[in-house]
Image (cartoon, rainbow, N blue to C red; front, side, top):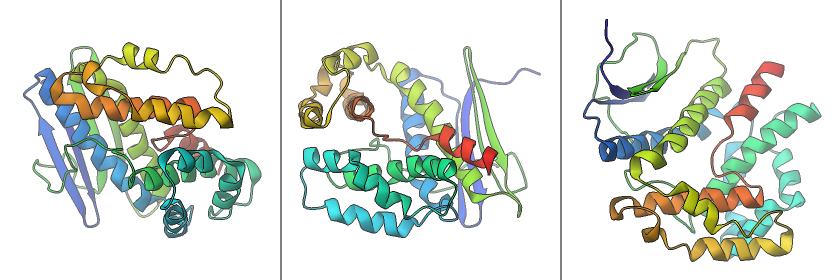
Length: 262
């Protein structure tokens, strides 16, 4: 039986019931749909981290950055002192496991701090309705895609034994897949953006404001079609933060390693 080209995401868990399926496989439509799903899963990850860290305390910590400009905020986000504070908010005593959770907590803090200063998500918003018949009766998160050589299946059936951090892991993994695929469908010049930041190799503390300044000056309209200028801007922010050593997205691998070793 031939499976039609499509991209579908459904999530049914408690009050969270959202889903949509794309079958009109034009590149620009795919890019918009991937952006929509990326926003949706990224926004939901913190809800599934409350068993392993104090999400409320981390969000409160983000308020300490409100009076700082972007450059100073990023310098402080990168500081060892901030990592130590985050360590107090994760529910883990084992040093190696704590470090993995601090990596995740750092992503949460980065997103909370920068979301009030910059555009960190795509302009499509988030899914708020279940517009397609779910593929499973059980509570679940499910993402499938088939287009050309791209075949992806990421799913988790959720029951009373499922650690909530495992749901966060799956959502993070879905988001990582989407952010890798999105630029090609949106016509974003990935190599060009990488080249834009190529002057920065090993970024030291004193160089962080320079990287941030370069990011704030990023001429997104030169690296993407007008329809996806804001998407290119988010991609450039991700590249800039990676140069500095900060995550814009929740690291699925850290959650995976934590769950394996826990």
